[in-house]
Length: 360
Image (cartoon, rainbow, N blue to C red):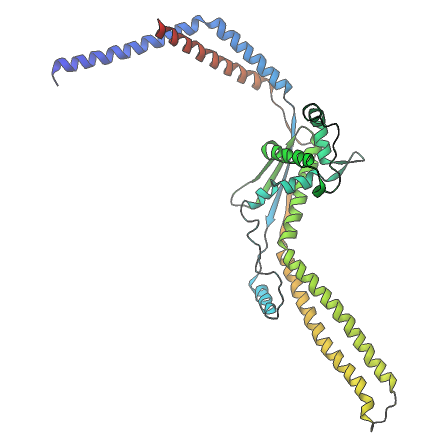
């Protein structure tokens, strides 16, 4: 490249940079000249931010933290259950269904429609009066007034069997569940490496926040325990029923032996046929005793398995009054409003200036 070409490129670059600097200075001067408009925008934004902060409802957050320890079947007990299974007895051991609530599945269970619906349809006592949680939520949010204006629903109740609810009732509960998942519930683990789960409920009613948090944790945890131990619990019930039946049969056999002996108290030793009834009854007693002993042993093993498979759920922190209060600070609202309106106004002025320069 020749010396003249180098000088030409250098001059072009200097001119381009100079034009940019001139345009920036011109833009700054233009913005300064519009300081009245910007000031009005800032004041308007601050007033709107203040109005929003005042109108925004105060909310209350109830937090419940609990530790979930999922007991695993030990090797010794697993061997006993395996040996018992050879006899056709199923204890539900080996951690059957152990993957159902592992990882983040239990968090999704808290957000499920079934669990939220059960908690909402729970009846609680507030200041000596019984009230369903769903009715309290509807009342302090004035939802019935909205339904009356939009859907022409004068009155609706959620008492009775949920399986018998109408289409409109199910639709309302579906909308509430979606709302709860979006803005009311916050379910998460405090630490990904730990088993501490945090359940947060935020609403405009302090009593509802606490009551719903308590009932939701109770509902989900009970469902969790029942599901985890369902198979083993059914085995315990079956074995207990068999043991009770054998006990009745064994008692009847013992009574039969006594009755047979009483029928021939002074039997002639030479008459062996007189001993046959009592001997038959004694055989029944021995066989029933052996079966009863085996059933009782299997029942005890099944009970031990049930205790071991029952997960430990320990509440670490439960919500107590007063709850955490969430207020939108008026100063924060004013600053955010002023900044947004100032930014939008300056951006609009710059765009307007650029458009005018292009057209002229």
